[in-house]
Image 1 (tube, rainbow, N blue to C red):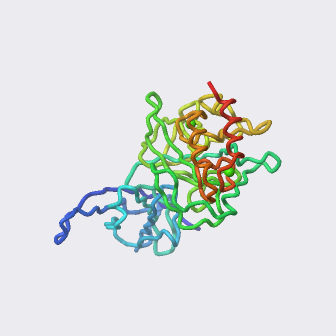
Image 2: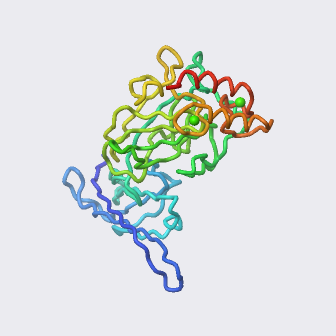
Image 3: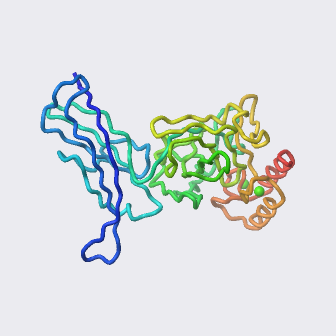
Amino acid sequence: MIKRYGIFCFFLLWLAGLANAPLLRASAALSWNPVTQNTAGGSVAAPVYYYVYRDTFPSFQPGDATFLTATTDTFILDADSRLDDPAKNLFYRVKAVDAWGNESDYAQTTGEAPFVLTGVRIWLGSAYQAEADSMVCALKDLDLLPFLSPYPESPRHAPAFAEPPVDWLLVQLLRPGDLQVAGEKSFLLQSDGTVTELDGKNPVLGIPGAEPGLYHIRIRHRNHLAATTHQALALNADNAVEVDFRADSTLYAAPKSACRLGPEAWGLWPGDLDQDGAIAVTDYVLWRAHAQSDALGYQRADLNFDGRVTTRDYVIWYRNARRTAP
Ligand SMILES: [Ca+2]
Ligand SMILES: [Ca+2]
């Protein structure tokens, strides 16, 4: 029988001056309460080892690829160079294993920044195919999707695509009231509408920078109209609250921001090339500027995702500009 242990974890980040280094280097101290008894109140077979796992996003899965160290101490000092990178946050998980191989649950994920978890499903208007009830994107087959996120607010880099996604998305948390961005992160959109981590599978999205609380979720795509949840949702760091924009138009804050794609399918309107929140003449101007070239590539004005900017993209803009006009 495997006995379970409870374990609690603490995290501290500080800047340490190295003797011969003129610059301050960041270090992270991670400590936890020792495990002394199992959940049935029995004693623990010493020695107890603590396994520490580390990665750059909060919803990472502990495993061989993320294993950092095993120790009988109840703390570690981490000096990974990524701690010095303001664009990256490191997160840690710890579990205890006793001499008999009994394991604790993982302590709650902790790290450089507070975070909340969510899950999002959504369709992109110009990629959705009603017959298949999924999205197709020629950019996948043409090998034109970049490994670097196109959103400078969250410049993530995917090492590789196991299965090419439809595109990159930016998930933002907006504070109720002033609607300012409290946290944002780039993720990948899969053809079934699921937004995932960079492995293309993990649907739990960790948004760093935000304490647990109430947030509107806004989904941004580089050439579609953004959508925001009508209601603020109570998000936390333990369970991912799921939002399915595909099935319910009442989820959208502005009724016109929900693009009807089928009897019960909703998604984002294609056409907001300049990302100003409207499909208007300024988007047409951008389209026209890019339509001068016959270049094949990952282009904002390519609304139908075939790799080129042509009149087919203009037709999509024209149709949607009329429908979404105020
Ligand atoms: Ca626009
Ligand atoms: Ca096109």
